[in-house]
Length: 70
Image (cartoon, rainbow, N blue to C red; front, side, top):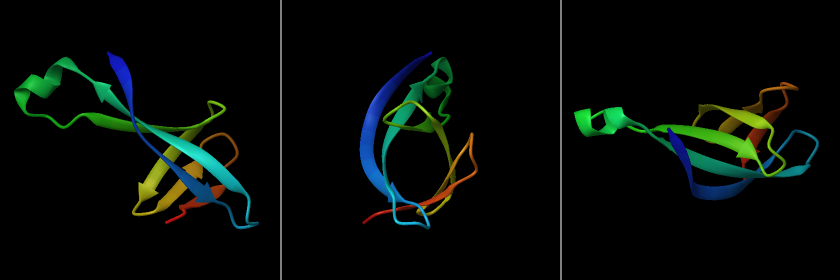
């Protein structure tokens, strides 16, 4: 399974700090069976980010909530 960088964006926490977030798409053999590829998110420094839905994200390690900057 390989990860391919498919996007980058910035997200802001409640205190106004900006975080660069990278979106990766996991290429899996199941894609041939019609299943959607899995997206994962990480900060530029490598910390994992959970997508909560819409423009909302959360840093996995610290629990800090982030909102995508449009």
